[in-house]
Image (cartoon, rainbow, N blue to C red; front, side, top):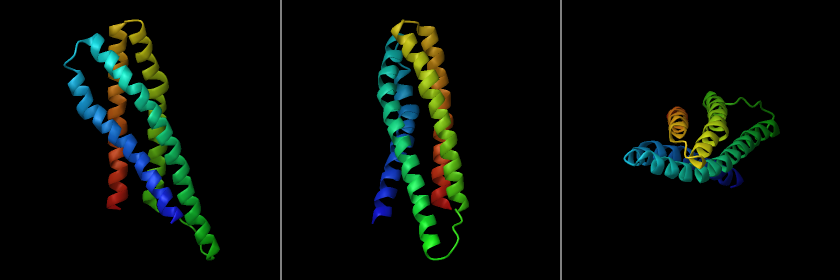
Amino acid sequence: MLYAAIKFVHVMAVILWVGGMLFAHCFLRPAAAQLEPPVRLRLMASVLGPFLNAVLAAIVLILLTGAAMIGQEASQAAQTGGAFFMPPSWTLMAAGGIVMTAIYGYIRFVLYTRLAAAVAASAWPAGGQAMAGIRRWVGVNLLLGIAIVAVIFMG
């Protein structure tokens, strides 16, 4: 029962992160592109700030619950006298998650900081450059996230 609850939290945090990127990249961004740069950049900065904070919480949950599930499986193997070998799909998921976390860090702590500063200073060209970088790296992270989910579900 505990394992199922931990897995539920893990999956819900992944849904928040990957689903949020999908929404922002495929729906919010194209709709916002219709707006004038000052309005568009203010909107995106206002939306991305809380979203990136929620993703940070999701990442913490993903890492903690992932480690807990791996630890629980390893402990169970040890208790039965067996050896624990992490499945290749789990290794790929963990490695991919670490890469995604590094990309998130760049988006949140470098690019979003630039965007927020540009919006505060009404420096629209600089804000547009920051937003272009965010769009690019969110696209990369979205593709990685979808690929990881596909590998897990398809074996």
